[in-house]
Length: 287
Length: 344
Ligand SMILES: Nc1ncnc2c1ncn2[C@@H]1O[C@H](COP(=O)(O)OP(=O)(O)OP(=O)(O)O)[C@@H](O)[C@H]1O
Ligand code: SF4
Ligand SMILES: [Mg+2]
Image (cartoon, rainbow over all chains, first blue to last red; front, side, top):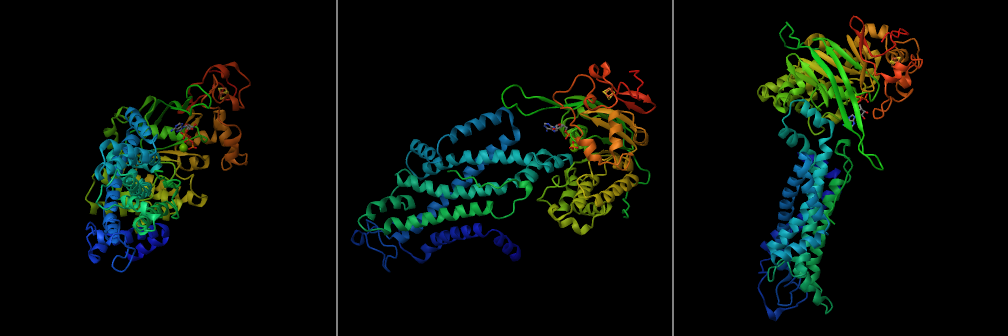
């Protein structure tokens, strides 16, 4: 088992590196608070805007909250929200794409035109518009981002299903007496996983970034809950006066997490030889 | 190479006869670049023949002549646009999807290319066991045993059951595809060019295997072949196709030793193993001229643009020749054959 894992890693250095980055940030966010037992919400105006020292390794913010504790707590929120967005958007989007790719006809046309209409908006604008409509807050921001990811999954899934469905072994499976449901689950879906996994890993990065962006413009997570995007916003106004640590630490973590996710996405699509049957490699990103 | 005997009652139950009646299949071609409707491509048109039970019927014709389309229509993998296929007392072309599924237990097809018809994510054992699972035959343990037995039947080591198709050679893959079809013990096996994707050295082995299996299992074969030498080796009757239609039909020996239709004559003459003319068979048969575009088919005989027999007889240019029985068991679609006797 370890040897197989070793070979898997050797063939996918980039993805493994990306995964390691994500894992380190997740460990930092969840294990960190067990070691660094400081309340991320406790205000202490007397110790506001302190630079990094051993008492506050990442310094304190404008109301004296410990930036390290906040960054870790924010990491939990951002990672969980990104995973939820990725999973929910993925299930819905892939479901739509699968149905469209399998059934064809009017249903396919209608659903794909709707998807195209959604795709006409840049995803960030779409997420922004939906969360504005739903009102500021973590849930509405997450919902907006989720909806904005659905078209990418649906389009890709549909084209994957159409591609795989036309492969000769699917016809052979029918000739062997396979029921349609079994052909879909055993022969079509397994051949779409890889491309969809690439898509999902890039969506995780997009979700974190967009959640932060919505927080940045005041739409997403509301104060005082720590979130990287809102922390970056509030840190921004102190950069010029020299208190760089408020915004830089959450910014660096956000950057690292997004890079990690994109490395996973690229690595999965990249260096492993893609068999003729799974077609040319692509790493679509909702950008 | 010895073939492991298959446990089957010694009185071989041969399936029923297969009757193809006026079968046609049209596809819509690509939309023209500028404007206009999508052209209709008649991949096969008005194909009729009968395959005797227990026999080996060969379908020959150059690339694009509609052989695979014909096989797919018979095997129920595409819906023909017209005509019917009757197998014993079952009209295959009238079956519902689920009825077809159940019929597949008795009628199997080995598709053209063993490189792409095996799911690369599955092991050989899983591939061969799949039809059994589809029809809920036996327990998983029984299936394992049946898979081993069938792999042995097609000359594959049971240890290969754990391999992926990618690890196999072309000949081995074709044997796996064959095992997948045979594991159900079908009565009729359709084989679409079973050897043309293989190295010449492997071709003979696979052909021998097919012949031995035919003898041992007592099933009927409908086999598509590209190469007349192969046709002579394995088939007892032949259907010669050109541009989607049958041009000649009859016993293989008779056709190959005394071809009547000008197209068959050209094929035989160009085949290095059979004809006297030892030029490259493929080149002569395939590249002398493309078959007249199925889209803009000329009125009259579809073979006319390449025909060396016609002297510009008006009938060739106006009437599409029907199959006529020229000798008992031999039918030819040509106004002038046998040579010169324009009695059509
Ligand atoms: N799904 C399809 N859609 C459109 N045209 C098709 C389709 N399948 C086959 N055709 C056309 O029908 C004609 C006959 O094709 P077919 O594959 O039956 O020929 P074939 O005799 O099997 O050739 P080969 O020896 O190359 O396998 C060709 O002109 C082909 O382009
Ligand atoms: S009908 Fe005429 S054109 Fe056609 S094959 Fe016979 S002789 Fe040739
Ligand atoms: Mg073919």
